[in-house]
Length: 339
Image (cartoon, rainbow, N blue to C red; front, side, top):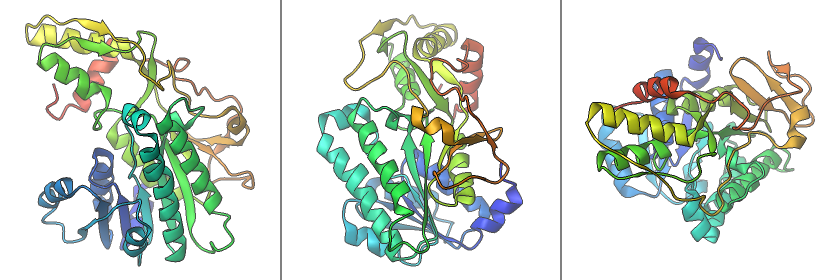
């Protein structure tokens, strides 16, 4: 864990851009950054309604600014990165079913948009850029994961482009971020509130999980650590989707006198029974501390205080799976009125 004083020094008076900053993860990154007194934070997104609502929330923060634009349009990205020190690239199409139905739209946002940002950051001499990725980029079976894998490769390669003399690029790989927009917990809770059956795709399915605050912490720490080309991964537990559904079912039946069912609907196109944090060929480049795994570029041999890890466990069906009590405690922790 990075010392808080070091983070305050690192982020203080920086000009920071957050693409996709109106989303649940982007907003948490913004609120975390404000603790460190940046010069300004620019929220870049194409959703005017979300920008309007977020402006009301941060109306007292004169250093939080908003720019309406599309990551797919290079001129817009090039303009908004002028004078920027740090970029957090959150903008993406993230919903697996949507990307399966509209694969080229996913390519345009997740791949072309990433390349636009890379070119613009190099041209404008941005210091550091952190790309948000996903465990679905490892051995992908769906369009979203495949596009995020390509984006990871673009960000790694950007460190070694012949015209890049200054900008450092890295990636963070998230697991499933609990209570983020479109994630399974809000879905189950909405179904329970309306007395509907909780829909489980396959009772064997497991997923890595992290809270939004963990995701924000990983992202900020990665910006501090990066020397260029790394992939940062938070050490996570996993959850069995059936156990999660059963826990929420029991909670509502106990506290709201409801009778609920769980309905198995089958795996959706592009889904896997388990997720992976690493490709097999990345294992030899892994270092770790108590919180993070870091995949180093081939050229790096030493990295801060991190130690080598030659046998990491990186499948969601092989790590610790939370039991019902642990899930309840986690739901209480992230509650914010959802239960």
